[in-house]
Image 1 (cartoon, rainbow, N blue to C red):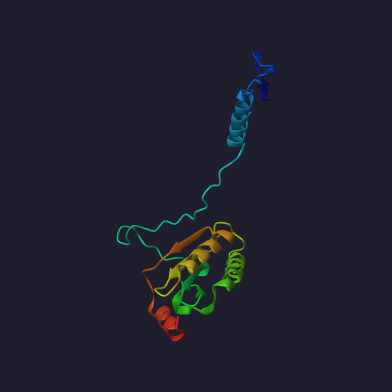
Image 2: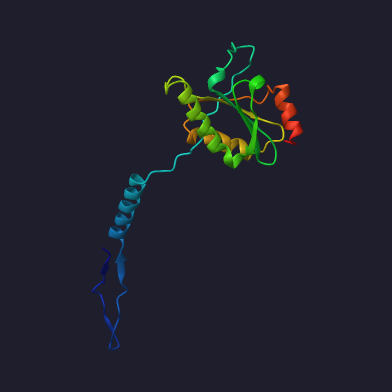
Length: 177
């Protein structure tokens, strides 16, 4: 490691020997520090940002809008006070359920199992989810719902913050959402 070198040029001055000043060589210590630094830099991994991929279409006039299959489409409308409204199928035949955001995971899993059973567990007939954040919804609730899509392994979900049906708006208004 470090060595302590003393010079041997101590001369006597009036009967006393002059103490030499020690010289410390830290070259080996510096080499070790650089070796450890490079070792830890090369063996550690930096944390990667976990971001959800969300892509919205440019404009509805630029794409051909095909209706979603009624038997496997779930719609989630986000409201205020950490509440959501969910239903399966089209709005005309909808059985709207209001629940807290925290209970949404159970509803998603139940509907996913229902869709799988309806289509004889065909992997190409997976559930499609439409997320509609209302004007009074909190951003945190939106993030929580998108996280639930990843957790429940929903293969196809869409975000539509522009197209609300009159029945959805009426239901939200009647329930003060």
